[in-house]
Image (cartoon, rainbow, N blue to C red; front, side, top):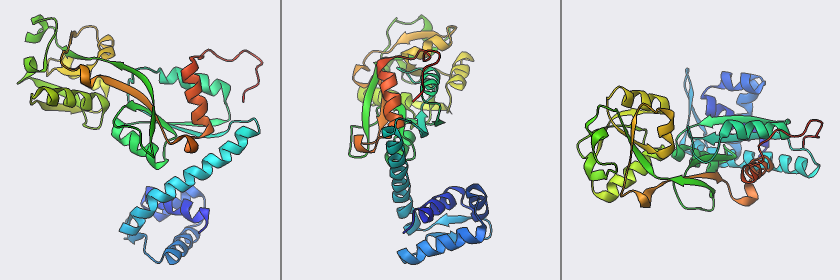
Length: 304
């Protein structure tokens, strides 16, 4: 089995189209088709169901995809490790993050990283914590800044960033704005909620808090970005339970602490693969984060 066969297979799986995959790989379509056929012969199983419009993975193809992505990620890490030993950090840093994550200023961190390692290509993806955890475990991301969704495993480990309590945001004219200074989940029964999709960290934290309190709630307005959530609350279309630092993004809203949620605080972490599979670029980024040295490198300093 050749690495190029796996690279071709992953490209077709991602694009669900031979022509688009061939264009992206800059190979002929006939050559790409021959590569996939060779892989299917070796594995003695069809990997794709082909139609005139697109191709989809067979059950065997789905099983191979996860392993192929992991193998290619390990090969990339091996190349980058050798380059790092030679004193040059290069390759790709694939980073994932939730929006407005606490404990790290992502743009500032990446700017400091690029100033020190200009030969590393940075790729950034925003998504919910569950999706990010899956992509780090599969080798598609080198690391991710996310909500702690699970304990460390043989595919995933975490480095703590910060934790903070959850806060209720509402419109100043809402009845809760003049209520007690501290609210409990019971006080919010029957309210209309604005919240994120279920795989986002703040949504999972809030769901856990209300489940622990035995209070049912209905999310009537579901969004996938912070500013849309704040806009809906600002129009008095519902209330939101969010990490405390969100209150600074819209000072016009009323922010009230939520008690009874101490066991389910919003805890953010850096998610990484096992230490042996962590890329040199990911190690360098975490080191930069831990030291907090985000100032630009001195003029004339040699980048690594």
